[in-house]
Length: 450
Image (cartoon, rainbow, N blue to C red; front, side):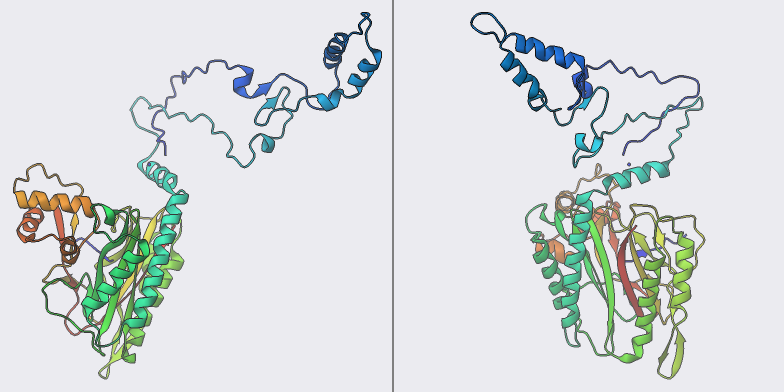
């Protein structure tokens, strides 16, 4: 799902001091608490052990009061066999037990973490970039990776099925339904019960964009049905989420071979972006590489040779949890920016190639809606708007949704309430994005985890 360009967290060490010492007092611990046992290792034969054994043996007397020398000899002989072994997880004094034996298949103990102390100017030594990085890396646990892999496999299976049924004559409503039914079946979340769609399912409305429509078009209830034609160029863009971890991928289908170079340009440019992505990769470098590849292609249409252009005002983007568009952008044209990719980032690397002006604009109609998480509903008084907002918060949160998704939940007569929410910027409305009439746009997209 393209991000339109605007017109114009782990512990945070944030204290420090060069003037005062850190006053942390660690009370002394007992030997048992520290895991140290004051005892000899197996196999050591010192005097103390010998004396202890002699005392024990001396207590075993014959009836006439004389020690049993036979028993004494026997017990001395078996002394090492009867000696207790060091309990697992405890060190000896002096320390002689290998650390791997103390922590078998376990993480080693974490040391004490001390925050920086502010200097005289109250300036923290930990930057916002560090804090963001630490928070992101801390969240990259096994659950994080498993959710993304699950979402990716679901997307792959549904995508491959869709590619077998996309043919001239199919209605776009039927195609969208096939995609969404597949995603909900594979995630095992139909999204009909309150909150179920937030567990897993569609990450945003299915995008089915024809010809000069670059992005953000989906079938709406009550609208005139659109059927796929043999000369159409169709972009299929849909997302899958598992616990808010979103996989966003898109591809383009064309039946007329005259569009082959247009599709190849976008596909090769996207693959270039994926190859250039990585930790500390600069956006200006990636954008330049994408543009160079994209604009090395040309298309012959109606006897005219037309260069393929990279669209200037739509970009790839990073993805946040439950938010398809983050605050970083990956342009398709060489752009001066200081942004870099950081460890833990998840990016939708996508490109749009066009035979038109390479500058998109908003078209009439509604693609979907998204909750503005920063907007307050404190001044909202209209009953229909308040009820609709509760439905949105309970079922979609900050995920983008369409009118079809609302009506699927049984919501009726929501247009006035939605108009109020949009006018107060509590909910944002998204419309189709188009190039000039008569042009053709191709798109390819995949997710990259840095």
